[in-house]
Length: 285
Image: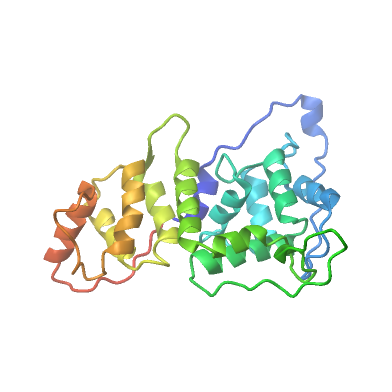
């Protein structure tokens, strides 16, 4: 299952309308004009951008349909981790939904009010935390007004406020831990302690496979075994630790280590697999 598949599974909010209202033409919000330049930040522009994708029945929420359109218009692929990074930066409480308060807080902090700026911010974080590209350096600064301390994010050439980005760049392991932990909370149904294995596999395929090839083998094992139905917080956390510290050939695996049963079972399976190095896995719906 791919992350984009979740958009098809999230129930849309239905509001009963009167017959007269139902027969009236529906006016869709104007689609934002695409531009390659972020442009200066404006709180009014950020609010207008949100309204362009808000649910027609509830202007305080961008629902799954609006979320998908937003990603499409901002060139944010639904096939990878970018939607998860977007949710993380917004501190969204639900997958593929954005509240107006979440949007306003995040866009104010990041000084984002256009699709190009949003796209730039998310791709910068993908490059830094998932693709292990070198961190961006603060742009050259112009002289600051008197009695005002300049900051790296105040450079006029930056497409958005990169204060968060530079903080993440100072400790990328900690930053990825934050993203990874957030994704478990995002995927977990309200009141539940676990997330289902299909969801966990989809998230692992975009969060861990690009950084840790061993995760491809673990997903192949899970698919082949077909008996693991859920993932709790401990298994979620320990899987990240496992792929970080255990070599792809398992040569440094410690059988006395306190790994979850699923990971111990994986090691047994891989060691007994006579096919050698497994090919990368495709996790599809």
